[in-house]
Image (tube, rainbow, N blue to C red; front, side, top):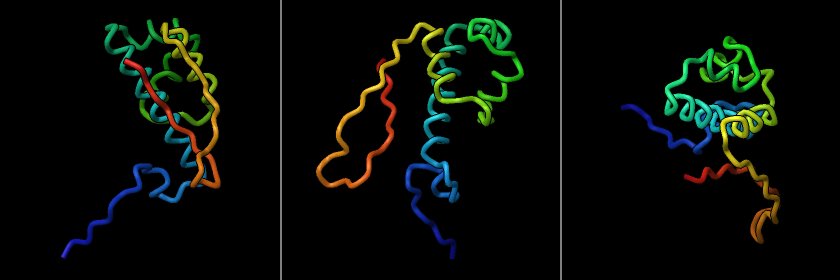
Length: 107
């Protein structure tokens, strides 16, 4: 019999990564950046020039290898792609002792 375990919604946490929240945020940001580049029909070289990074670094980021690329740099990439980036800090909520990081992308 095959045992199936339901995931938490964060593959990095499921894998036991200490930086799971940060990795999930970076993955979501990289996905959005990749979607915008694809929608515009740009090559990675064209996109890299707009984003102010090298093509190999962009390629790595889009393939999920974003070590060495900060969340701030990724947010800046979205701004360079013409997106409005807002950071909202609010209370964690009544039932939560700790806060959480959550990304919401407007369409």
